[in-house]
Length: 215
Image (cartoon, rainbow, N blue to C red; front, side, top):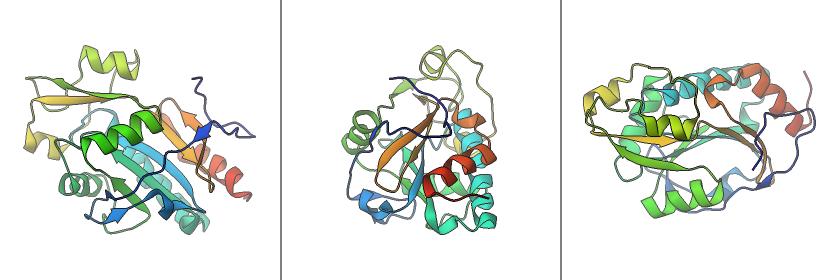
């Protein structure tokens, strides 16, 4: 599948997966229908990550603040999926969001998890994003050759993640560093290959094109 950043006219790439009874960072059940009529910015995050995920989270907090100042906050939700459903849950997801500047009780960001089978179905079968658990006796979330193979050949940043340091788990979750835009009808319209490098103004422009607004 060819992946490119948003263009002036965003093509319909594929239908985003439907799901039900996933849990958000506060333990509340969420279904895909909750986002009908809204644009979704979709990310895939590992709570114990200390490479790309914290950078993506911090950038998305900045993007959400920009949405609020643009008067579009009620039209767009950030939806992220936990790619470590077997090892982490709502508590770790909530702490992860708080570490990078988000009020976990704010419903505009839904960080979702479920059983390993549920998340594999949604993330890999539905969004076509691969992830895998890699055992590593080094520090939590450390880079590995497997991580580079999945995420690409570019060097990975190292970012302090107190949650990962405290947990000190002997594994990493390697996954594709992508960000997606899903339109109001549940269709994937753009895929950004380097989620950690997407600028908030670039993302806002693409969101505006889906909403049919200017400014």
